[in-house]
Structures are given as structure tokens and as C-alpha cells.
Amino acid sequence: MNSGVVSANGRPVTVALPCTIEQFLIARDLPPRTVVVEQNGEAVAPSEFPHRPVCDGDRLEIIRIVAGG
Image 1 (tube, helix red, strand yellow):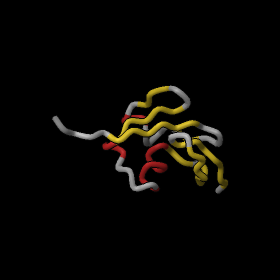
Image 2 (cartoon, one colour):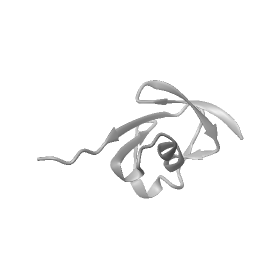
Image 3 (tube, one colour):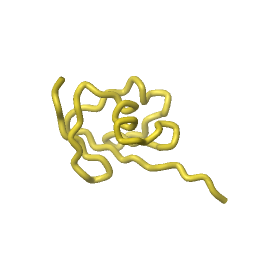
């Protein structure tokens, strides 16, 4: 396993590679169904989280979904 660095919400984060978006989220105690993810400026569908690889140098924006009214 290698490690890489990604930008998550503007902050550098070291990540074990290979890794999917789903694995990245779970490792940070973020249940995948509670967030919206943008990878390198592209919105990622939740159905892609288990299959979409995170690569060294990626930029991730992770937004928590909050219910309310």
C-alpha cells in the first residue's frame, strides 16, 4: 500500500492508496449516505462512491447533508 495526499475541503490529508471515495469517507467517520462529494470540481453520484478511486493530488469537497426545515 502507498500513501498520497489529497485536499479535503482545502486541507491536506494523507490517505492510504489505493482507496475509494467510500473508503475515504468511512475512515473519517463520515457515513457515505450523509454527504455530497465533489472530486476535482465534478459532482460524484453516491452510487459511484464504492467504485470511484481517490488519487494522489485529488481535490475533494465534502459537504454534510443536514435535514431541517
